[in-house]
Length: 206
Image 1 (tube, rainbow, N blue to C red):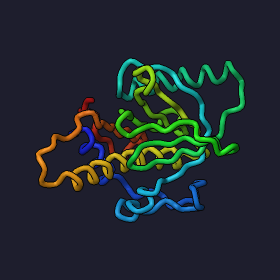
Image 2 (image 1 turned 45 degrees about the vertical axis):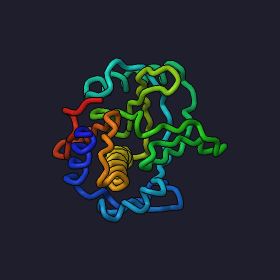
Image 3 (image 1 turned 180 degrees about the vertical axis):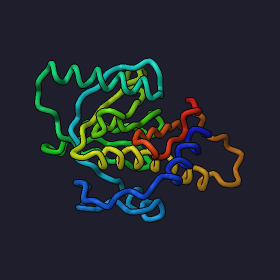
Image 4 (image 1 turned 90 degrees about the vertical axis):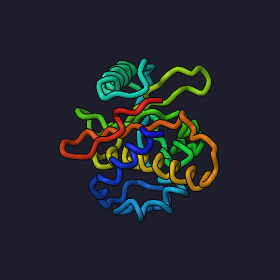
């Protein structure tokens, strides 16, 4: 749980998110501060992105690992020369939900317990990626998404980290006064690649 707390502390030190209309569900704009964000985050913050693809990785977290995985995904996408699937990515304390933007079909629900890492790529700064453990095979997968603007990719990364902080807050509130052990398999690592921005949680493990 220390990794989760570290990610939350990084978020609270981060600058306020820019207020832009980002294709959010219900035409909602991003709140300026963490306090303003708690209520909409409970319902789910939505971002319209293009899904670039997935590749397997060996480590649950790490900037170099993620950068290499993103390069592989981009290379595979260029070879395939296919039209990218437009998805609605919804972030909440429950995790990440992916919905096809055209058909409205749910593509996948990723539990927050399965996500180990999220990042905005340092070089391809419009790309957001996360690492999660496959529910079927148990393998670690890196999924990458292209956003219309750099600020959107950064906002998604911060929102995922804030969802982890809220999940921790909700868990602690529900178990206040009990001797129940905290779930040790609830990780989160925030990587905010833009120079001068906050970083946190890199020392935590699964």
